Length: 415
Length: 78
Image 1: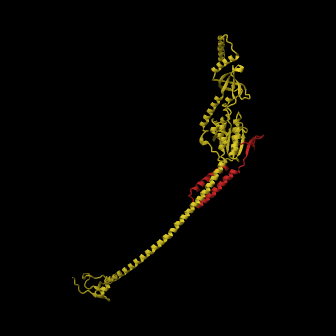
Image 2: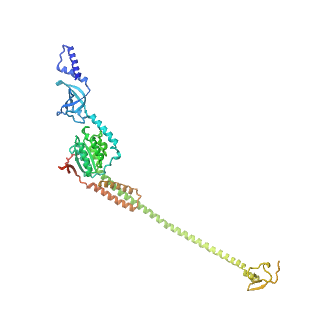
């Protein structure tokens, strides 16, 4: 404001120096406009919103004020796209914009191009602090995350029953699996009651065990709107849940604390529905394909076995042929054996005759027949081969070809 | 739990198909697996059909007890 006064006094000086030149209001306004708009094309200003009105056009008109001063402000509809919160009377904000003069009323105002709640800094800090603390405590650990059921029997949904989130979830699940059962636990998803209600809802499902997966979420909004999902109590409830929890807070880029703790984080409620319910068509396709492969596999197995049997049959035919060959060989060998045997017998008979002859010659009895005799001592029956072996008067026994006789030694004649 | 059974059935079915396709089984074993596989496929199909779509919303009654009531769905034009 002080600055504005300086500007005005400069303008006054200008007018004085021009003396005779009288300006029209439009001309003057034009000069003021040039001066102000040229000097403040981009300013940041901080203050409290008051006198907020949003007419049909959608543009927001308000005053930014502090203890001593105020400035009119306008936030055109086109600049509201980036806005992640709703402007409210009494809200502390930081605005960025340019000063503009509104000719018809001779008023200057700030045309706001960007606005953020002044509290954001504090919230952001609380968020970072909580995130770091819970992460250190292990609430975000990957190995703590539970797998989602493959095909849930019933899905528990914790959200507002009137928001876009529940409609999106129901629509997607209906499309993917027309017969899926769902149980909705209605909760406020913003404001001071939201966090305790969400905690209670998670507790309810864990006590009742009547669903096998939980979707907890809401549609998109500003950091303040989503704040329940950044509350420590909600984070701990999700962590403690024995039923797998899918977080579905509708804001693709930013993560809430709930997202970090949840067993699975979905970027939007619709995405959460898709993650929780495998499409029935896919499942049917999978089963059908298994059935087909089952039949094909069985057919193939039978084919294989049949060909194995046929192959074995061919193998069985061969030994018969081999048997004939064997038989022939046996015959042949038998023939040769017979020949060999007869040959042997002939040779052996000749040998036997000659051996018998030789044996006859060796027979001591045969020698006796030719007139030789054997004399033995009596008693003792040792064959006497030398005169030394007997004494005069000894009895000896002599064996002849026929019979024996005893005699007494009368005389010895030594050679 | 029933959904565990569904997943397990589907997994077992997959194993059976793979084994049968390996072609290394005897006739008796093959027939046994084939029979089991057909049964599993039927169980899975039945499981997909048995559920009745039911969307309910929880309400607290006067005594603070939770009761369920059918959830009114707005028909979506899609």
